[in-house]
View 1 (cartoon, rainbow over the protein chains, first blue to last red):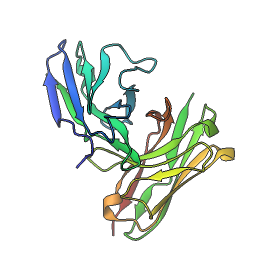
View 2 (view 1 turned 30 degrees about the vertical axis):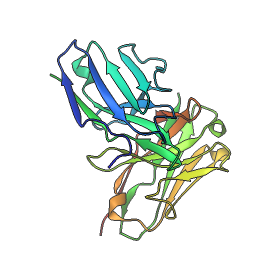
View 3 (view 1 turned 135 degrees about the vertical axis):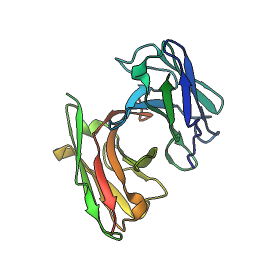
Length: 110
Length: 119
């Protein structure tokens, strides 16, 4: 059971938009930054979003992040088959005094 | 090129020990918090441990506290994870990851080293 809760899977058609939710609490998302990671099978995770809504250099603006209260959302527009991957949210938890991740969401572009 | 390369994984019996290493290149090693993150086969990411740039401050997940020890050698640009009293549920791919953006995110990841705990 992960501290941050994500839907196991989401799907959308090519060219459409999808959102992935990440639900936490006041000890993590509510008072700490959220980051998002993309992971393809057999590969290491890759940072997509940091500080809730900022993109590292090289990440296309099709990827966006937002946070409201104790929840965060990753948005992906103009979906491509190459976006099919697992997506994870992460934050710091002040009660656990450690980093926490969501359980991951598998994105299917149908 | 900024790079992290893990090594030291392998097959170990329950109750055994293993020491993982992560060698960094392409950045000022001592300026960054480093982390270990693991991923059991077919499962999600689990943060294991962090160590600040000086090596003075360390943090552990409850699942490994008292069994694992994180350390670093800034002269050798190396991060370590000493794992004792290993259990079957420690079986995972172990990644080292660099903390960045105020340590709020992990911006560089290694390719991982596999640890299998089995009799």
